[in-house]
Image (cartoon, rainbow, N blue to C red; front, side, top):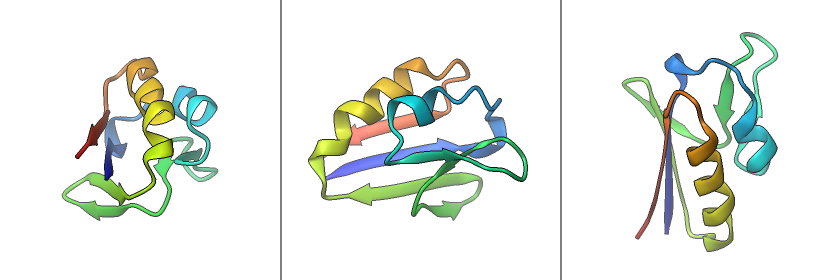
Length: 76
């Protein structure tokens, strides 16, 4: 199980996450911030839980590239 969390309010719109993990992230045309696809929002945190282990490596690269460190990726 891969768990990805995004603190969207702190996003600066650099687009690194979309370039590195386009299956999980896209940029919003409304405000220019990252959107974690298919995520559920709770108190400003957007989270997905996926059984697809193949998304882990790309998601970790997106987390490491994020200049404001608002992406968290865990594997359980």
